[in-house]
Image (tube, rainbow, N blue to C red; front, side, top):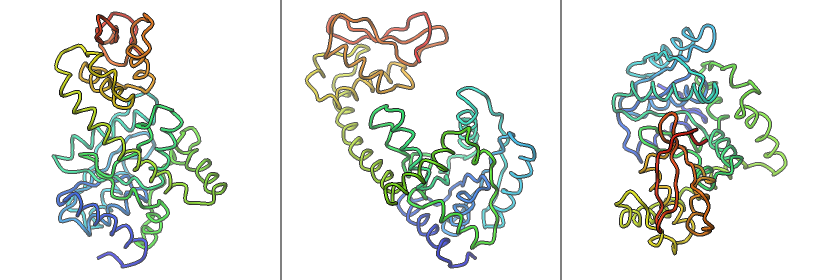
Length: 324
């Protein structure tokens, strides 16, 4: 039985609202042993019918197996039906942070057995995500932030500050594990959390994290409407392998580039950026006889190239260095 103290009640209400909205009965909680996921686990065990905990051991630090097992034991103490430790091998592609994230999500996806996985991302994590997207300058989509439900991933705490989850752990009388990576200035997110966001809060008078999250929500809602318009148009014209320029050139740029994005993804493109989409768009609206545009995707030793031919956009696989 959880104590009815302020922080715990706030976390429980957030989880309860999420479960009611998304009908989450049988759920899995991704537990790291940190304050956010511990508070989430306690609340989920109290609010959901049945909760399993999955703990990922990345093996990146001495004693990580013991830390993972301790987290699993605590999950059962908090009321989870079961807890399982998933040991993963972390690669090096894309840097340590990205590789660890990829290994973690792959392991959780395999072990969830069809259930929704609840993640402990908070309002502060959302603000960091929006700032990182803003710095990339890859268009509105890059600053949409995280959704509260992006199947199979659920994020009930996106409106809850990390300070609340830490307070909840104090109220529960449990000490969360502090990952040394969370304090390392080698990681951009850590510097955003420790340096940039506090400075913004100070200079702008507070409320920055919540404002960034609201902005992301508004952009995501607007973007969803444009995506739907573009998807409807693409369904009507996108049956062939080529894309008819005349069919979309009169559309607003925001719709036109979304249609191009859908067409490229259908053709096997990956990791598309705003720069890619604008360059392909130029093949239609600023045609000066320029050559093709290489986009992400293709096979090893080859690249996907978009070109303009006879009033259509074509996508071909060419031998050579893959696009960045």
